[in-house]
Length: 563
Image (cartoon, rainbow, N blue to C red; front, side):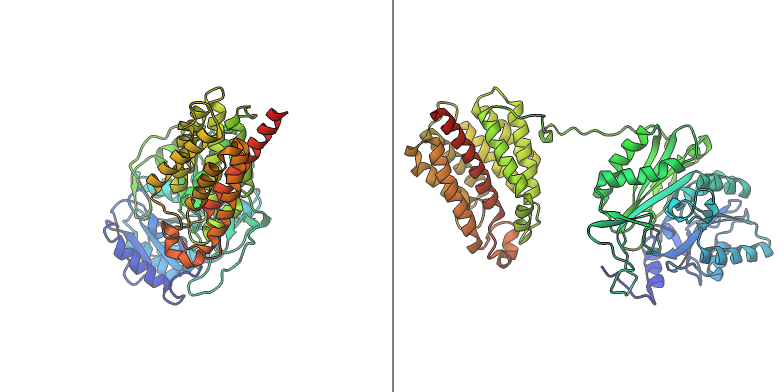
């Protein structure tokens, strides 16, 4: 992925766009690459001035506003702003009560902010500095001064801004920021490198089977390469890295799961659930949680976990109101946050299997769908969104669970429960349509089950399917396998339930394969119809897999009863 813009003008252009977009809250510092709050300077208030290279938004300019920073200065991508830029921004923000500089512990930042601080002091403007050093992967625990500042920047800036907003003097604001930094630890992971503006290749790449642990925010890779982890395993790695590093306290913590630029929020929430479980299991009490992008690294794929141990002062400051372009809080007392446990009974897989015919048939179908899930997804991805295999797996597992819960009920009631659960769990068009097939087939089986009554039930189910889905034969949909199955089941009814079903399943399998010669005319696939030529329809394929697996079970039953 190439970042929009060119290296030569990127800093200027994005900053101009930012100030234009958020001019109601911030304004540009004249002749500088810096911004200050709309009502800054404020007489008698300490000015918290933060900054660093660009490429980290919302840090740093996005965190300027009441209760946060008074101003922010930005350099080129991953590069410190110059001392002159820092000086001009600080002078514009100063309200006469002194300046607190806050930035990550990087050599360029230390030098340039340090030079600006000396110049301000020489002019009689008192100032202090807080170097953020939260990254546990960048230095040993016994030398915290050697560590870098990463996403923990947000916690430190938040506390410093709140102390300044409260009216604390410069020494008190500095002391609060120092405490926040001392109580904050961060550990991160990357799945893919970032690309500099105008560049065609990322600064580093990560193999699809691997990830980097202990990454920085300047495009550098991590300190350790491991195999690609799932959300639970990644959460465990991050928490395991932080727990031994956390200072002692009364258990209250603020938690930040930070996206590095390319990680979906939904993925972060999945990871955070496990993070919360682990922290609570370790005796910690997350009283404030943030999940989102706070300190990014252009378009890097990855996350970092920051934890700040709270005491009464830090908790009080964190709970105060603040407002900025990228973050705002109405202010509220911090309290325990219990782990949400959304129990989806439809997706629960009861231990063991039932003995009923519906359960056994659907369990066989489930195993077949699970075995072919990847292939079904591949077929769906040819001209759609590639989720058919996953949706079918969710749906059929839910159907099996429902059938097991209905153990002892009639076949009709079991199929109705299974169809309802399938539709609920799978979602989408396929979920609804398979739900109708199961439920309507069941509705026709309330009396004695013979090949004729089964054929009648399937006829009714297919009519309901067509009425709901509006498909026609030849549209390259599930119906292109369902209709041959229905017709063959009716035609072979004289041969008995098991034989008729298995012959109908063979017809469905052949018809599903022949859909490769069709072009879709319905749904999203119709827009990419030519792409699907030569590929079987995923819905027709999954239907053939299901009825084939059910036919095998019916055959086993028939053989056993014949003995």
